[in-house]
Image (cartoon, rainbow over all chains, first blue to last red; front, side, top):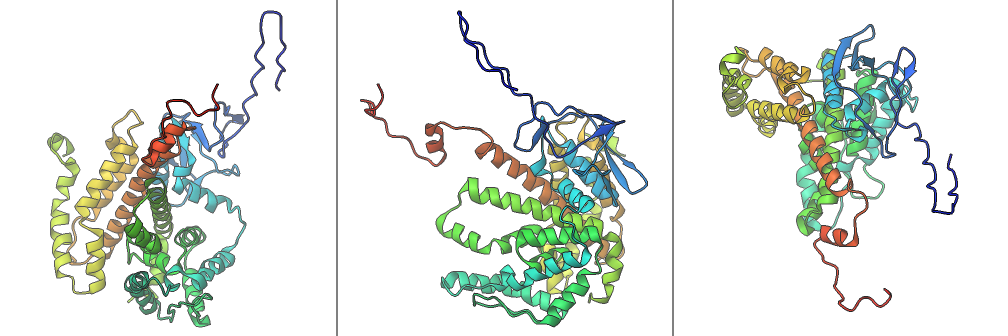
Length: 289
Length: 153
């Protein structure tokens, strides 16, 4: 409600300010009462309203407590995670917020919310299909022909990881310089589909997230199988950008910013997958050396 | 045990892990035959370094809370996990490798979140900047016209 300025004889009245709108993705209830979401900015930030973050074990798993309130997902479900280490990491994310809560830095919390709410409403089969579909446009399979230095760099850096994936999963992948990309045989896709099927739903959400960030199924599998580190995977994913940076220089507010953000998201996704799939490592023994 | 070595640098808990990192990690890296494993371990670095970096990041992360970072569940979990995997008779212990990879990944997460936030604050968090400040961001200065630009009254 805004009152119009009414000029008076002596001066002008200031119009009443807008009532603060209710913002924020997280709804917390404490015996039914809502926390007033007062002075929040529209940029996805809220003031830190809690002192202590702790973990407790409930029926469905581990829960996060902000002071005495239980954390909930954006769809108001109770926030429970299957792994204690994951709960500790999420609690650390919440605890490391200073005056304002910056949701865009809390990648593990976001991943857990996605796994709990499943906002895109995909089942396991759809997730796996989405993940394997990336193979057709996998970054490490898409090669340039010029400039020659970049083509050489791609060959030297990306061929080994493709060779690793082909050996590890006993499939044929190859690379291509054509615009349509590599021709992935159906047997290769089937192998990856059945391999991914051995992961549980939470881990799959994480895997699909990492693939979407890195734009590469092969690099993501390299991370999941602990063949390469996060820094290396991000470097390989951004190979062309790194090549251009070496030639033309780095622009901190763009290049470094994107690099840090990609590293953060990829690291969060990888950690999420490993923490959610610790019980399923036994199932993979058949495919390992 | 911890109180005895409280005053020492680096983090006291790291001292107990010297044995683990000294025996299992470094010699394994030199002796590893498989190219894949040595490449991976070389890329990961030494577990001690990862642990130190991780503890440092946790210290930064818990600067907000009043209590010291040693009381946080994250710190205690990391320390106990590294301690549990300390003693192994195997030359190459897979569980140890998995833990080290997880620790390195978590370290990467904490570090890059902190750096990303710093960059965000620096370049995107300052609201509206004046033209002079914007020019200064990329190293330019606005031209000075002593007589005014002509359209100012």
